[in-house]
Amino acid sequence: LPQLIKTFKTKKADDVSLITLIMFISGVGSWIIYGYKISSLPILTANIITFILNLFILISKIHYSKKILDRDN
Image (cartoon, rainbow, N blue to C red; front, side, top):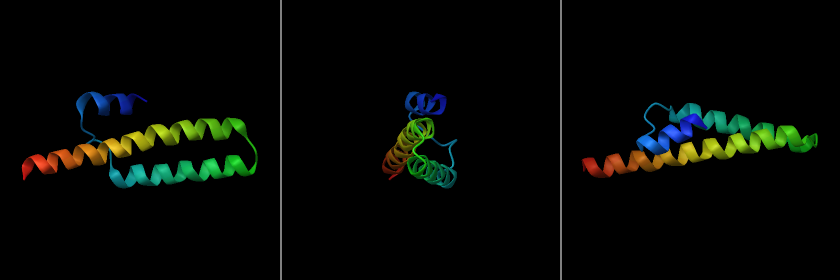
């Protein structure tokens, strides 16, 4: 959550690695599948929240990167 807040305030996500973020989201997605398979509400809840927050960071990173590229051209 602090990283997401910082990303929205500064309107940039340069300090977040795109590859690491994608790998992390993939791992969280695996935890969601696992939580669903074993019917564990705490695992599902925690990882769905984490997935959504990190997905917003990923979207912000891509969006703000495009703005910088558009501005430079």
